[in-house]
Image (cartoon, rainbow, N blue to C red; front, side, top):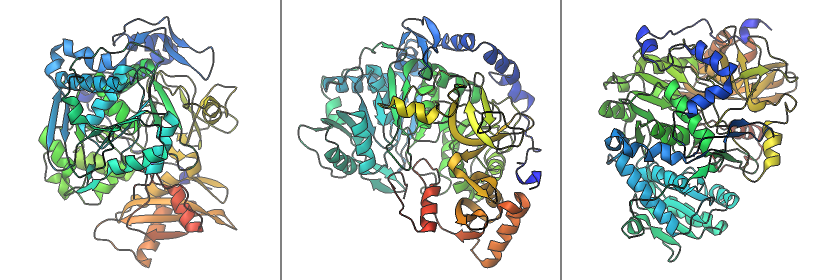
Length: 635
């Protein structure tokens, strides 16, 4: 097989301007990276010194019992002190913390002072229901300001929150409630999405019936449709907030740096959901550092992470990271194309958004509507763009760069996981970019691409992505299952002590990382390993294709052949001629080995609610097998 089959378009460079480099928090990535790797203990201690602590640590890192690492051992803190309490003693108390827009156009703004008061009220309500340090509270809500308030209120009390995305099925919610053993649950009557009501309270009622550990349910009124309210169990939030129990001041619970902050269950397709555990101390240091440096966050920015607080992106980069840094964040309730495909661009224009962080799925979805929609709006306030959730194909990267960033905004393409807590491989604004590459590890992170035997891969060679040293925001365990934690993430390279990410990647000759996808998203054709992202990128680079997903299906001769599903852009229709044209295009873009055996034109693709394509569903459909657990499916 020829070498060029696996070679990404690495000759294409995008260099930052001198202004971007001069204004960046970190103008010289190489210098800071060398410093961090040479002395990680001093490096992270210095970053921790930028925050306030009730008691300083005795030891930065306790690595005496790997892989159960502990950070800032002996320190006392609470992430809410750094996210809210300290700001209300400064000029930031009157700065906007949150700008929220509902899908119907209603708006709410909260200064740091008002957000602090609302969090205090909510914390006092939770306390009146018996919630205390260590208790788990499940949150199942839409994208409204109260989800941020509820999360912070839990953290303020030292009660780990278990946020479940407000679209999971009854059983998925019940499983997460049961595993976390939550006695209190926070929800809404409903949420608006694409002009329709998502009946959240109805889902909660059924989930609680299946998992009866819940004793109290707090319901925020959002849509106003009739819902069942069980006396003695269910309480309207606005009624509770009017009572004397909802005092606007509440003491923040001082906790150990290693005290649980939240559980977040990975949206796996099979098996018991994994409750990933993160803690107060190291997490607050890492998410604030990564956001400040990667997105060059400054006091005059209007920052918009267009994710949902229910996912790790929302936890780290909607709620905790921005608030620790004293930023002004945008939160939008609804769909990006409702009622028209320019909704996002209208929000950028109306609020003067300077930083936009979103997923390749959303970018490709908006690409389908063409350039005319963003061109209707003044997007000149933007200075940085970001990508998260999956590898971004070069075609989508260029469209984002050219049409949304006007060829002026660096794209911060971030690779990380629920388990890692924060960015692991991503550029800083001062770093030169290659479309489709997450570039280099964040300062302090030692990453590599290795073979099955642990030896480092050659440039351009596919391998397993590993993290070789601990970092402050790393997961501490899987809730209630230390054995599974060790087996899943640490057993493969136990002797070396490396964290196995579960992703396949390659490094190029410049040391840039190219994430291919999950290890199970690799197709072996005639003995050659092809990443689904690579073939999909080839398909999407064709002018007719808006989105693509590929799977491997068994073949007697080749082992596996590629089966592709394509969503076409407006103005194109599926035909035998187009199918052949796409095959020729993939042959040209990726190589003969990557040409799909069959291409099917479809209107939609099965995705999780976080926007990731569920290839196992496509595979099961193609093979006539049972579809399995569909609780994470969007539609």
